[in-house]
Image 1 (cartoon, chains in turn yellow, purple):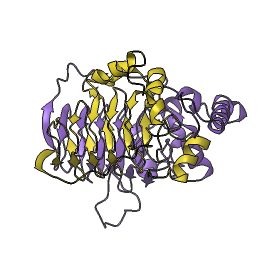
Image 2 (tube, helix red, strand yellow):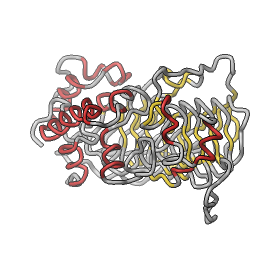
Image 3 (spheres, one colour):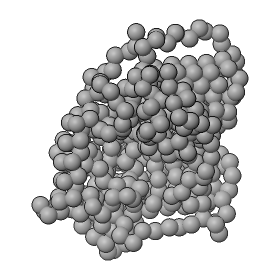
Length: 196
Length: 230
């Protein structure tokens, strides 16, 4: 049983067009850049809580069942410090399956989080954490422990935002900018390879 | 939702979007300003949603620059902004200018930033004579950062994500981060590029006509400190 889309988010996106380019539900008070550079897993809606900032100018890859809290920043591009209008090239931001990103935390560019990680409130994740099931905390974030909580199962009919799972490979192939998806791009560029 | 194999807007949103573009392109013919046209593509472009929230719904109506409907601006009369910078253009910011706040030209401000100029619980002065908090030109304030009252940041300061800036860094050319913020690295002033835009806007006003804000929108004393006797 997936969560129902809140009417406010749906109305804002589909009638007023606020964050209307996103293919997943987003709160109207969240901010989004470049929705076609986000590769989203099933059952994860970054920005459904207000005051989030999903800045996907260099690509964001999000796994299944990621829960993203209020005021979370997923920042994929570093500004060039001496010329602030430009960005430094880098790999996409990767968040593994079933991660929990608590409110007010920020994931900075080039970071890769393993599966089942928990980022506690207000942390600033500056480095990758490739150890699954770890808990990150602090500014800058450090691994402060590990957890063994079971993740809720993802139902069979879970969608990638508004896109049904069986259509998602087709959707990605047609719409997303593959050059920003890093090592995740080949799965979608090879013809009909991943389509179920 | 039916099949969604493209990233087009839904049909109601498409109609709203067309109407919005039509309005933005022709608003100056109906007696409005040219800000929709002139700021398009700049780092603080005026969106119809912000204009509507401020002008029609009167949310943050005293701010003379585009402000996101989800941010809160207080004391806009004592907040001075430079060219092409708009504190609160992003979502969730809290801009408190009641004690006098200056934000320099071309400074970029991320979502959820708090720029404070009055200590917690302090009584707001009727008219501050100087800026309690001032931020230089070409700075970048990253997401969720807090600039405490009484802080002075020089030009080309980059405030990292989640930083709480409690001390002044008036020399500029540095990257500061952490809680409390300290210098992480320094920038080479020779390499920093002070880019400018020929037809820059101060909020909704062209830079050449900034004097019209004096008195009505901005406190005259603070205005003269920044813009001189123009």
